[in-house]
Image (cartoon, rainbow, N blue to C red; front, side, top):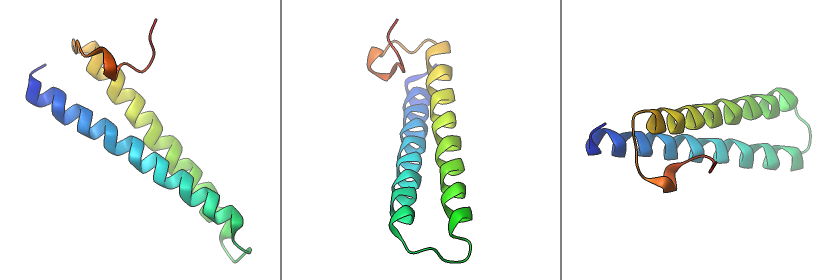
Length: 79
């Protein structure tokens, strides 16, 4: 994988982690609010969104490792 593609993949991974974090912050805030119509659906939707973004980021890390990235700092888990 070229350096340009590795950099693009790392930016994509970082963006997904940031989106996941934003969704979880929204869940926390939503729990503090007084209930309103659609409140539970909003919280559940944000949980699903955060889960999906996390899975995308994890998949991106695995793809980066599969394609021969030698940067050990980007590894999801150390063996």
